[in-house]
Amino acid sequence: MLDKRDLDNFIPIVLCAGFGTRLKPLTNYIPKVVCPILNKPVAFLSIEIFLKAGFKKVHCNTHYLANEVQQEIIEAAKYFGYDSNQIVFWHEEDILETGGGIARIYHEITKNEKNNIGKDAIVVSGDIAADFPLEDMIKKWKAKNSNDWALMCTHNTDCVRKDATWVSHNNNYVLGFGGNFKPNENAIAKVFTTHQIISKDLLNIVEVEKKSSIEIYYKKILLLGKNIINYSYPQESYWFDIGTPKTYLECIEFFEKKFKKELSIEFYNENIINYCFIIPDSLKKYIESNNDDIYLNKINSKKILISFRDKIKNNKISALKEINNDTENFYIIF
Image (cartoon, rainbow, N blue to C red):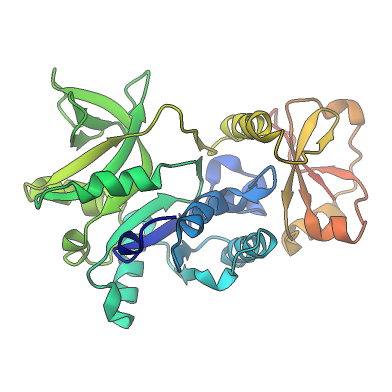
C-alpha cells in the first residue's frame, strides 16, 4: 500500500485499445489485453497492482472490441474481490494510439475534476504481463529535479532493435530513440518496457493527437531540452510482451511454474487451461458453425488452451474447437 500523499499525486492509466494483430485469429474474438494468463486477463495484472497499492481509480482507454475488454476486466475485478467501479473506461471511437490515448484521458479528467490538475500520470500497457516495481518507480520520481519531465522503464537487450531506446552509459537518462539515433560510446541500446511516469508539466502542454508516446511526449521532451529519467527494470521482476503466440505461451508456462503452489491450475493433455470469464458472442457463433472434429493427438503440449468460466458454471463444456490451421494453433474449450 502506497502512502496517501503518493496516491494523491498520480493518475494511473492502463492502455487497453490495441488490436493485437500478431495474435490473430485469436484476437478476432478475444482482445489481446484480456487474453488470459492462467486465471486473469493480462491487463488486469497491471490494474490489480494499482488497486493493491491503494489507488481509488484506475483509468483504461478502449477501442478495439471495447465491450469485450470492459466486460472481462469488470468480471475479473468482481471475481477477485475488487470494486469494479474503481476502473474507469474511456472509449475511443477512432484509435488515438498510445500518446493520444494518454493525453485524452488526462485532459478529460483534469477538465472535469479540478483536483487532478496537479497530478502526474503513471502509465502501463495492458498487453504486458509484468510485476512492475510501482513503489520504486515513484521513489525514483520523487528524487527528480525540475528538468526531469518523464521516467521510462527499460530493460537490457541482446540485440539492437529498430525501436531501441538509447540510454546513457551510467543508466541515468534516456538519450534518444530508434534507428535514426546516432549511438556513441556513451549510449546503450535497451528496450522500453512501456512502464512510465509523465509529468503534469508536459501533459498540460500536449494536445490530443493520434501519435505514439515516443512521438508525442519523449521526442518533445528532448527537443525542449528537458530530461527523461531512465529506470532500469529489475532483473528479478518478470516481464512479458504477449504479442506473439510464442511469447504468449512462454508467459503462460512461466506463470504455471511460478504460481503452481498458490493456484489450482488445470491441464488438458499436458496443456495449461487459461480461463476467460465470458465467451464473446462472435466466438460462440464461430464455434457453433464450425463442425470440424479435433483429434486428441493433435492437442500436444505446445498449444494454448482457453476456457470460459460462464460455461464452467453451466456445465456446458462440449468439445475442443480449432480456431486456425496454422502451425501455431489456438484451441478453445467450449
